[in-house]
Each structure stands twice: as structure tokens, then as C-alpha cells.
Length: 157
Image (spheres, one colour):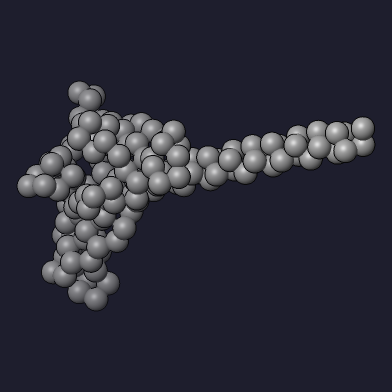
């Protein structure tokens, strides 16, 4: 009788622990995917708002997004034109800055469905709509996050 009662308690505890560990993994994967989507939204929104009018171009020559803006150079005391390009490398999105020299930083990983859900389009109201989807496919196929951002560029863009 005691052995059967102990077996029931231990069995129930084992199932509970396994369930908690699995839900923690899924939650962690979704948190990672969300952070990647938020990084893309932050950087692209920032750059589109700063872009010079008429310099926002979607998909030029294999680049996901290209734009230009002027930045104050403290050394020369003049404005210097910077070119920003967002480039995909597999499921990674990189931000490339060019102003005589080129630097590149990783913006996000796990970006999926590049051709269909990750795009920036003018919506007819002088705003851009950016939809981004990320999925931690290494952890769980269902751990994906999708967000849509509406971006208003500078006047005249």
C-alpha cells in the first residue's frame, strides 16, 4: 500500500517537472525570437525616420533596404552623407554603414520567411509598414513571433 502511494506521488512529480522544463524552453525560445524582432523594428524605424527624402529604396541589388542620411562630423565640422544598407546573410540581418569606410553589425538572427513577411512597403499615406517574423527553429518550431511596425519618415520622403 505504501509502495503504491509513493509510486503515484513520484510519478506525478516527474510528469510535473517534465512539463515545467518543456514550457520553460518554449518560453525562452519565444523570448529570444521577440527580442530579435524588436531589434529589427528599432534599427529600421530609427534609420527610416532619419533618412533623407527620396533615399529609401527597397530591395536594390540584393540589399533588403537602402537609405541615406546626413550626419554631423565633429572633426570636419560639416555634414557627411552616410549610406545604410540592411543585408540578409541566411537568417541573419546585418546593418552596413558606409561613409568612406564600411562597418557592419548584426541586428538580428532567426528571421524567417524573408521573401513574404519581412518587407518594408510604402502604404500610400507617406508611411512605411515593416512586418518582421522570427522563429527559434532550433528550439521549437512553434516558437515564433511576428510584429508589424508603421514608420513615418521625415517630411518630403
